[in-house]
Length: 558
Image 1 (tube, one colour):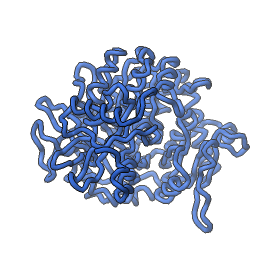
Image 2 (tube, helix red, strand yellow; image 1 turned 135 degrees about the vertical axis):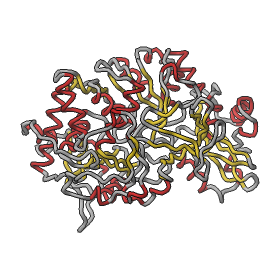
Image 3 (cartoon, one colour; image 1 turned 180 degrees about the vertical axis):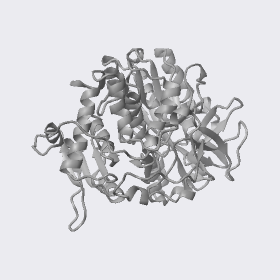
């Protein structure tokens, strides 16, 4: 079933902000509902489906949430606490269906209860990461106009000060000592709440983009969208069972984490291990100690776990999912040889909510991302929007039950073209329908007329035994247009000197075509990442842009 111009269902929202700020319908992508699991009824509350129904279906005493050093929550406990949150929002704070409620917290059980409670109340969730500074939080407040801000008490210091005469959300702290703390308020509630009967196409979630380009956007997702990725990618490729324990590194504020740590496990009666900020090895240790069977993290984390001799910690996993960055074939083989895991690669986006191209089990081909997930269609297009044949790089485009709707739609036309969601990634399609990643469209380096994909260079550099990790971007150059610039984190005990630089450059020339080698190699202590561990290449490009007028010697040897 295809839906393009079908009228929206009658909304349950009294506050019409979300529908008023949907982009124009003629700028929406095509939506297709080709698998039966995503053909939802007109009235649908995602929280009902994710906690009320599973509690009744799988058992109230089943474990739902685990956190290191804390007692696990059962499904009934999570249901009761999310109902209590909804009661506080409605009864104490006057939240109306359609109001926005901003959440600011690390990955904790109470964050999950808040997220579900907001949806139960018919409100719209805006989840943010605690690493944001006050200016960044204020920017999101200005964009989404939340009525209430539920903030972990440990994150209160970075909240923006209310502007004189301006509007500010009611702020309630979570997990602190005060009588007005959310946890204390919830303790005085019955835990009985009737979920607001929202429409399947009422907005449930406003998701800020992860900032891979440095320009924040707000994506808009319906109640049906929240369930759709569980009923496509998770259902068809991960095959969750109630005995599974999901774990991972991404914050719940990012849709990669929201899916992998909340929506997927709850949809199928499984449980989730919630960890706050951890190193890759710490994540592996906690996952192993808590019996995790499904792990979500970035390729860099898997590589670091293996490089630091901790691969045995991953052997108890049933599934390892890699996303957020391209998974090089070399990393896939390293992890497989060390652990026996066949990592599931996948590409997703905040605009699409989660993974839409992937492969699992015997369908995996290391070095390729996979094929369109059941329920989605994907193609490679040229600049004129025409499908390209096998072996020709072009723009990845996708259609399915989820799709891009930007708040206010100011940049909608950049992502949606002729009904397709244009992800900003360069892929090629092989003869068997597998998608092979080349680069982000903004990370393709053109040097002396040659097109050089930054991820390919990164993969070659990372094979060097002295390299822990790297990030590659284009540096403007008056002679070549651009040159390949590599920011390199060296392994402990390696000397950052000219000889090491030359060794890396010569090594790369042996791994890939010599014209792709990094002419500019810079040693750094760490690489910029967002809270989910995704490399922020735009920060490195911004750094180079500020140096254009500096002496050439500052750029390092060429």
